[in-house]
Image 1 (cartoon, rainbow, N blue to C red):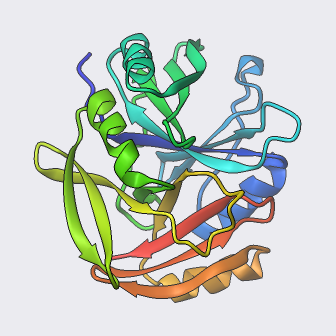
Image 2 (image 1 turned 60 degrees about the vertical axis):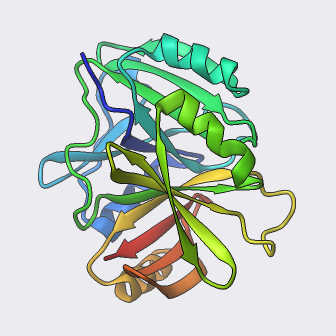
Length: 250
């Protein structure tokens, strides 16, 4: 199976799956029922209008923070793992089968950001993206972006489109075949030093301000209020268990 090296799935590892399912269902209108198969460990594939949009599962280690993870498509997770090591990254979880759904692995890039891959079998990935309530964009926030760009180019074959952003800043768009598939930017200096590089998941919405207020009412913390960018608006919030995600329009 030939699989394009683009973001095709996201999931949440959380300290409280019950509260998380309720929060995101109320925020986005998801139907989030845990997989009844005991082998799934309570993992939930959230759906919107009958289409899979994201996953919710439990954290796997004590002390692990609640966080969203981005999965990049691959036709060979083992080969990608070899490329990760050759490019200076770290294999955190070597490729393994997820029942009959597919095969996955977890890596860290040279600046410490976690990124996963998904080799589809029965489960091909998200059935909806770019529509309200689904993933609208994914973005790397890196400490030392220039040093890490070659890693993603070598591992996934991504091209780069750089554009001016703000005062003296630059925004990077990762591209495949000339199409922008994800973004990257240097982590702002005001972010505390203990925060490592990370990938951010943004969910699409028609009204960022309304969705941000709704998230707040449901127990989220607003980390960045609705803000204009060249293509629309975005905000950043933290869910009740501390997982950070964005809301985006445009």
